[in-house]
Length: 258
Image (cartoon, rainbow, N blue to C red; front, side):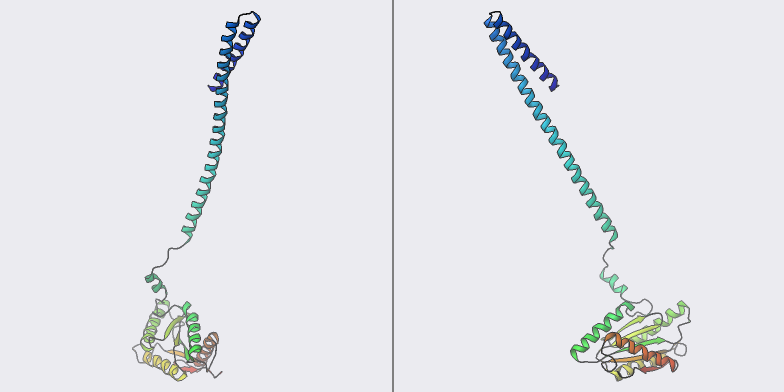
């Protein structure tokens, strides 16, 4: 529409200029003045329309540029949102304190889960080194549960876990290890105290209604007399347990002096 108006205004201006030229040639000044005014008006209109066209074109280019920029921003926001959704879906919801407490314990024995044993031994050895006090590790193994069914094994482990919890002190820690073993960490306990604790567990289990069918062997190692490091201390307790196995079931053995 604007292009048509521009063409009409431009045509009017040219016509007026031609009329002015004719007026001058025919010696009619009044007609020439009128034609000149008409040409000026038409030229002004043409200029105004041209300016409007320029503004319209500039606005159109700016609008296209803004639309392109907004489209890129929307695409970026969409990608960011999608990434956040994927990350949120990949992340598990944080566990509640109750859930963390439940996952810390082995369901069969009621003792700490196996994954905590190495950390607890390391912490206790470090504390014993700082305070110049002994600690002991006792590894118990159920003598008759290796070939038991899963149900019988869980029943036996439940009994052993209950005996160990009732026998050890609150400052001591115990964790299930593997299928039929339990590792106990006895704070501020030298060799004699560790042997007494292991014998008490063995004797309590032997005196229980399942004593004839369910017995334990145990290996004892003490820091610093048997080992100076956490891993070595556990290894020495394992060697003592092997020695107890070689001498028969229902027995407690002590690791050799380092």
